[in-house]
Length: 61
Image (cartoon, rainbow, N blue to C red; front, top):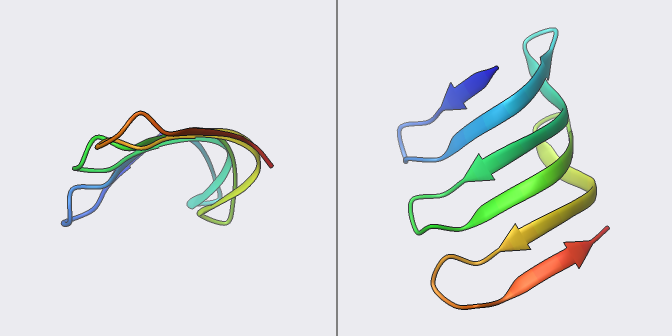
């Protein structure tokens, strides 16, 4: 599934019972991206976060 918020954040991934839950990707207007596990709409578990304005990448739990 896919959700888009008014502030420009986009989520693409698993949606269960109308909740963001499973594995997916969040994208922010500044170019930041999170790919990984989500639980009840929050980044949770294993994933990779790439900051949009600098070369920082965080991978882990």
